[in-house]
Each structure stands twice: as C-alpha cells, then as structure tokens.
Length: 592
Image (tube, rainbow, N blue to C red):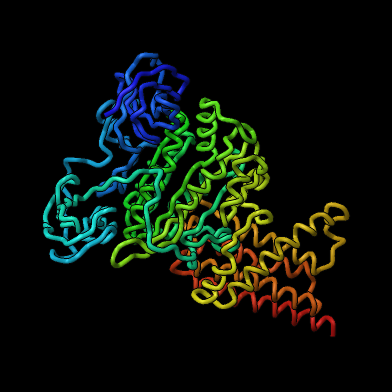
C-alpha cells in the first residue's frame, strides 16, 4: 500500500501529496476515519481525490493510503433483493451495525460472507473452460438461477469441481491454466465499475421491451437492449413512470438506481415492491430487483459512482443470459455531481458550468447498454435496456444534460407539465416524443400480435397530430364551425387520449396492459372512427353518433381484466357495429 498526507480539503475533494506510486482511479482510505475515496487526477506526487463520505473535520497532515486497486463491485449470489448505496455498501447490514444513520468510515462487505449457498455443477471436470463459461448454478431465490461463470482472464482445463454448500469466498472449482498455474474459482468475482464487461458480439435490438404502459408500447416503444430518456419538469411524473417500468417491464432482472433524488421515492420502492406480484412469475417483484440508493441527502461524490455500480451489476446478469432493465433516476443529479467535482478541480467549465466532457461521460454510460452475445465457449444472448430520467431545471429541454442525452438515446419520452396539471398520466407528450425503434418493432408486432397493428398505430398518431392543428382553428372560430369530418377527428382524438393513452398507475387492472389487450382496445377505439366516418358519409347526424350508448363501454374497456379481454371487447365491438348500422338505416329511411 502507498501512503501520503492531506494538504487541502475542499468539500468532497481532498488533495494529498506523497502519492507518486498511486494510479489513476485507485481507491484510497483517507484519514484515521478510514473514509473511502477515489483518485481523479495526479500531478507529480499530488493526487486529487473525490471522497465518497462526509469530509467535515478533515485537515492537512492526515494520512491517505492507496489500496492499489480501482473501485470495484462484488458480483455473486446475494445481489438480488438487496439495497446498496452508491459504492455497493449494503444499507440493511449497515443499519444493523450502526443504526439508521450511516457512520463515517463504516465498512461492510457487499455480499454476506457467512451465508452458505447450494452450488450445483453443470459441467464435469476434465473439460476445457474459458472466461464467461458457466460451470454451475446457485438458486438465488425461487425464480432467479444465479449462473456461476469462469472469471475474466482464466482459461484452461477444469481439474476439480465440487457440489455442495459454500460461502461466496470458498473454492468450488479449480482450473489448470495454459501456463501451468492453478486458478481457484469461487462463487464471487470482482469487477472495476468504470470498465465495461467484455462481450463477444453486439446485436441489433429487434424485440420490444413490453412495459404494459399503453402510450409507450403502442406509440413510442423501446427495444430490448435499447436506450431511452424520460425528461420532464418537477411534478410531471418521472419517478412514477420509472417505477412503472421497473415493476412491469418484461425483463428478468431490474436494477433501479436512485441517484440524487428524494429519499421518500426510494422508500416508496422499498415498501411497494415486496407487496407487488410480478405478472409473469406471480412472485414478489423484489425477487428480481437490485436497488442502489444514493439519495439527495447522501454524499454528492457517491452519486457519480452509483451509476457505474448499477450498470456493472446489470452487465453481470446480462452475461448470464438475462434481459436486464436498468432505471437511473436521475442522470441530471449525476451530472450535477460531475459539475461540482469539476468545479472543485478547477477545470475549465462548459455550458452552464457543466464539464466539457459531460457528453462523452453520458455516452460511455449509455453505450454499456445493448443486446449482446457473451464471451465464452457457448455465448449466451443477454441484454441491458437503460432508461434514464432527466430533470431539466424549469422543464427547459434546451439545457445541456437533456441535449447531450438526446444525441445518444433512441427513445425520447418527453413529459409535459400541462398534461400533468390536467391530470393526464403518464404525461408523455405525443407531439414531441419519438422512438427510433418504431419501424423495426412495428414489424415484430405485425408478425406476433396482428397484421394491422402498424396501420392502427399510424392512424391513431395521425389523428392526434390533426387534433393539434384543428385546435388552433377551434380557438379562433369555435367547434361548431368545423365540418362533421373534422369534429369526428376531434372526438376521436379525445377518445384516444382519455380511453387509451390515459392510464392509472394505482388501479389494480389499469396499471398493466398486455400487448394483446392493447391491440384489442386500440382496434375497438379506431373501429368507432372508421365506421363513424362511413356513417357520416351516409347522412348520419353527428350528434347521434357521439351519443351512442356503446361509447361509455368503449371508455371503460381499460378496466376489463386480462382473462376477459377477448370475450368482453368482442361483445362491445358487436354492439358498436349494430348501433352504428341502426343509425345508418334510420338515416337512410329519413333521406328516402
């Protein structure tokens, strides 16, 4: 270990001299309090260190000791269902040790060293193995199979593998490497957080990540392995959207990073997730979730590390062959931590004081998402879908973090405070949001859900856009001056907005909608438009059309349970056809 002494303290930044033997990004222990820090800059024998804990009371002359290794996370059985802080300290364990407040300098292993896990080998000794190969499994809980992989940098002949119960530090297998050395394999491995885990090949995203949120899945879908941003002003529902995606997205593993947001939002997650049942497995959502909490009252420097801690854990499960959904709430707070450290390092500021490298750091984070084939003899397909919330001050989407994010991401769900004030949730504005995966995923849905999916979605989107144009005319001359066709468009747009896009996150049935139900609902709503348009051409009075009794049933179709969707919506469709036909025949008789 290499040591030095403190010469300057400026908030979370500590400058120490006598650190010539240390390396960039080494983890260091600062002062007698044993505070954790990381080296950001080295000039001669002076090192600039960001400290991940409160630095009050530190002064010149106190010792700094380098551990000689970069900030790394422990990867192994015991991650699922845990809540960690930004540098992977287990908060539940720390609470048992020190009470509700995190004491300075406290140390706790991320993974329990005493718990024994039942290890079942999946290959036999004598075979040749290489990095990334799965040699056995541990059942983390009733639904997650933790696949034990050969660590990076090890390859050779498997000379021993043992079935039984082990702690994460005990040897379960031995490999004789090509140079003759024997490498021990345990259930746990470590990985530096700032270095992406290697993979064999990156694939193009082709299948949707089904979220159960109608406006997302239908109008602005995201692919498995895709990247998305949810920007919006205060109170527009960013956190609820992130929670909904974490709850219902069809990913086997969820990594939720609370980065710089309010503590009560993480409390909501902790209280809600154990009670909620996963729609695919029927088990508690915590049985597939890893939480990382670095809330606004925790040290600012650790926010920066929390994003990397989360994505490294996500990559580990991706390498096992799982589809992982990663939520970062919010990248704006992470960028603010970057800005604070950059200012204390006296770097040249960029726009609005953010460092000039803001865009490249954001890109490095989002680039670690994707759908890949893992390394190893029999590479597995896995994916990370990264969804970052952005909190622009005052909802100004022209600010640097939002603009830098928009240059990287492929899906933009722009939240609108005007929709939120009208109690329209999710408050995603359909006029400025977009998805660059649309064509690819429309093709998938046409093949797997229905051939007319693309037509229905395109017509619904066109009607919403036409409504925005007609509203300008209505404000000037009133709705009665519009033609019956234009009035039908306005009424249809209202139906799409209120009966389809509006979704109640706190309603037992409406909180999640399968793709089948989304298709049936959209087809029913659009059928009213298609048949209504023909009816108007045949002389039906528009007021009679709008007053049809079946319209109430169409509006309540969102509350139909999944098991009754086909039958109930089919009956509503039949009623719609018969009622419009009755109007058309009545109009025909009157005209005759």
